[in-house]
Length: 123
Image 1 (cartoon, helix red, strand yellow):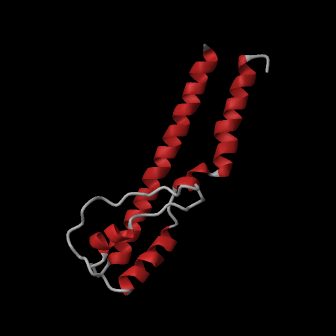
Image 2 (cartoon, helix red, strand yellow):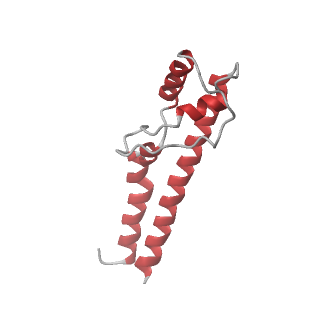
Image 3 (cartoon, rainbow, N blue to C red):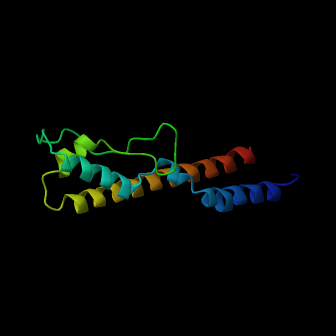
């Protein structure tokens, strides 16, 4: 690489072509249908503790970063959704919102790194 144009092209390829192709955000997301099936099985076993939910449902990162390997606290989800007749739809909507939020976080992080790379290269 002998010019700023070369550096700009490499950065463009990295952030606009290669990173989107590998779908890095999937390493942080939930497999919604899998979690819903696990939830349904747990609810089907019977729920002992239907006390008020203590906390917000959040994504629990898979320590091995498997694609769609993250999960949630199913006990907390049961407290939030286990007693509603429309539990599956309500939980599904929440899981999809969590995935969208996490995807935005990942893209924001990558965008920040892209901008930082531009600043660092310029110095």
